[in-house]
Image 1: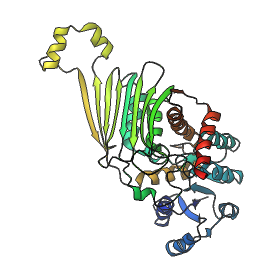
Image 2: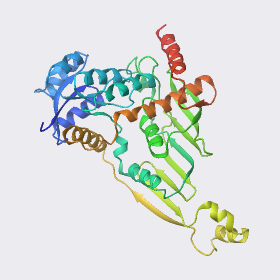
Image 3: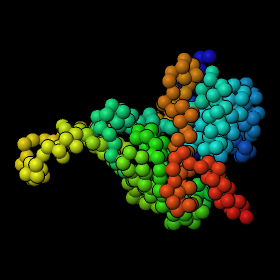
Image 4: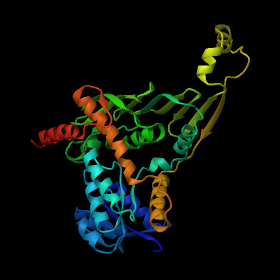
Length: 381
């Protein structure tokens, strides 16, 4: 196999982006094999933009066609695991868009099925994992350069969506159509990154507001407290009604601190001595001198790095990596099995807010599904 033949399921905004990348030859080890969308009107669009590419209205027909040996799922969230399983059944490699699913039970199903197909590649589109900035932050944490984490804090409110965005389709921002709001649509990348970099919390307590500033039944404003189980805590804040938006991540360790602004700049401060040693050995006179700027010298070293990130470049990197794993076994940046962690964290946030109580991780999957089903059924009525 010289190149992977990718089938794009869903010719919406994201599906079109991937098809364009392939059409323009931006993915060196992959080509466009077929397109599928259940909307007949998309056939005309596909014929205009991708005239030589086979088009299918039923994704199972595409999987049976022999025109593709891999797929990407650019469809509503509930369908990601189902379509992934159907592809793997036919020995077709699967790349799921984020999130891996709406609830952990369905994601666990594809994870378990994928184990039966170890010769196939199963991945997820966590394109932010290819961001050099976050790779650098993870490297610093993993190397112990700022010591043990004491606190995390991420304010990510750069998701402003006007009412017109939600009015584009009846499935948008609904329990039955998308499975939630900002936690499952806009913020899954940051939810994945915070656990990928800092680890999963043991407990969460969430205050989520539903239809707070938009006419929708799902969450548009969320504040969560993380308990990492070792004394360390965290706060995660996100919403879709802040037109000015903030993207700021802080990670405090006992040997330093990392501050990320706008996912472009990272400020790293490494203490010359661990904070606990400073606390145990310094007099208040020495502390006062440091606070006045008259102290014996610096107490930390500072590094500032700025990163460039071209739109689409990260998605292209995941597609390249996905194809490389298929072709020569290059390690995956984002294995599909990793997708369950972000889904579980989002599920825990929802469940905590619904029950108005702290929720432990792993969550009670049956209780979560029961509560979600109540909301889906209420919508249908």
